[in-house]
Length: 206
Ligand code: MD6
Ligand code: FE
Image (tube, rainbow, N blue to C red):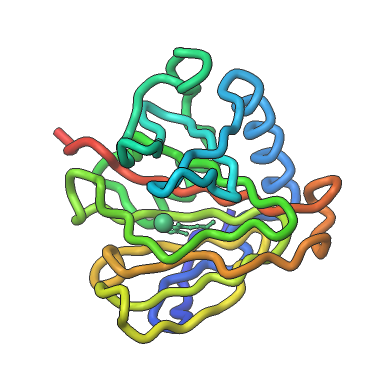
């Protein structure tokens, strides 16, 4: 794992190729085991349409959304079971950026062809002093980021398989999303697609 000198891409801290190809494969295997016990689901948006991304999680919390709104949950919506532990490799990436406490949530987003994620802020966590750390796997995703208001100007850049990125400081509450993926470009996922892990602390650290 590469932990040194994050570069700044359009004001965002990125470690290109943080995970080697072998590590990406190992993390993918971990995610497959997670998906077996915590099957990915498509949360409903506020206007009753399912999201194009499928999500699941590891750690204590998972993000969830339905007509009643969005929130963090501690048991799987279908199985009623708690989520499996966060993979060690993902924890190691987090610790390259943050050592005060480990994350208690690792969201896993799965993008199939033509899936996207609209501009949003991650603001349901207790302490914005902690970052959100992302790891990308599979096909490239066009990441767009703006400022703390929806109408703030945005810029975008590609995230590739193995890249790690952190939203912290002035970027922590910036609006961001995924415009599109370059489906079928990476060989990591058989059949194409993109996986993104976002590690965060939902509860206050003690
Ligand atoms: C994605 N990422 O890359 C969506 N959120 O699929 C996010 O929503 C995100 O990459 C907070 C921090 C980093 C992220
Ligand atoms: Fe986000």
